[in-house]
Structure formats: structure tokens, C-alpha cells
Image (tube, rainbow, N blue to C red; front, top):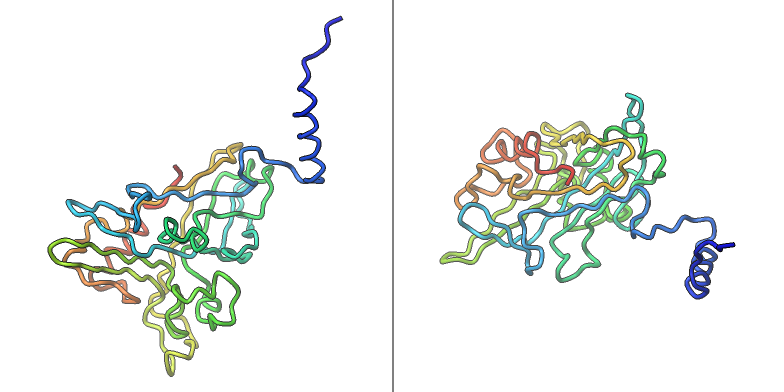
Length: 269
């Protein structure tokens, strides 16, 4: 009688040891845990330090690029269901920080993935993913020094009046003349007694951007791509003023917020 094919003794022992160490947890041999969503920059030379992107005929250094996401939800059977982020140094249950600029020189201070605290079975039922770029009002204007990571990142915080930077992009180039340009998106038109005091009511321009991404049921290996050049599309950053906590009704901030809302700068890969 023929015996079925069996692995050699050493691989079997190794597998047994791994399962023993894991206990009841499921081992993901692909290196991705359930709910993990990598974010990848496109149109950017991520091997350069600093990273370099091309806009028109010019090459720009990405000196800083990061943004906050909040309120993760999935759509199942036509109904939105609130989910949470897994608690890490880059995520609270309700907010997450993506940060790319330090990836080549200080990878411990960079984060290019989200991890939803969900099961693979739940993701297989989802038809949409929804989240907001920005932070809720109470979180946004709280004292950053007393907030948990990543909300205590001083590089993404202005003051209690204006709150956090929902998105921060700093670029520069070294040509015949050095040029620097910044886009710091946060709530604008916030009134308070001083910069150290939070506003009592909503700001004139909340500047939060909601995203809804379609999902294919049974597909749990999800990757999101980010196009920095689409964020600044049709804005001549060689001549335009920087947009830092400014009204979305003035140039170039009006065009930049339109790009965030209408251009596919964030989408499934």
C-alpha cells in the first residue's frame, strides 16, 4: 500500500514548534496580519534620501510628508459598521498617523501602514472602506503633550487654537535658486482667546476630507497607493505661496483642497 507524501522530520518539528509558540494564534506566512493595509507612494523615488518626486520638469525633495486618518468604517450588507484601529505607537483605536519622510534615514520614525482591529472573516464581507483625513474636534484641539501616541507628535501639532496638522507636506529643491514650499492642512478660522486656548465652537473651515474606497468581497490583501503629485496638481509650487492653516477659499489653498476631494491621490493599488 502506498503511503501519502509526508514532510521530512525537521520541517515537521519546526512547524510544530512554531505552532506551539503561537498558541491559538493563526500564523500568517505571508507576513501580513488580518486588517493590515500597506500604503505605498507612487511617482516618488523612495530609494533616495530625501525622497524625490517629479512635478513637471522639476525634481523636488520630500522633506516631510504625513497625515492623520480617523473614524474607520466598513460597509457590510449595505450598512456602515464602525471598526477600530489596533492600538500601536502609530494608532489609537480611533486615529492613525501615516508618516513617510523619515523612511530612508530613520525607519523607526516612519509608518506606512494601517492595521484595523478586525478579523479576516469580517473583511471578506465588506464592500467599502471609509475613513476621514483629519481629527475630531475635541481630539484636534486637546493639549498634544497629554495625548497618547501618535497624537502627541509635536511635528504634526501647531497650537491648541489651530490644533493638529491633518496633512503636512514640505518640499524643496536645490537648483539655481533654492526653493521651499509647504502645505499644512488643518482646521482654519478657529477663534480663541489665545493660541494656547482651544476654540469654544467649530472653526470656520474644518477641512476634514472623507474617503470611501470600494472593496471586492473575499479580497483581504489590500494595498493603498498615494500620489503626492496629485495633491499639488495644477498648482505651480515654483511661484505659489505656501498654504499653512489657511482658508480654503484663497489661492492656492482652494485648488489644493479640491485636489484632495476630487483627485485620485489615494486609491487601491
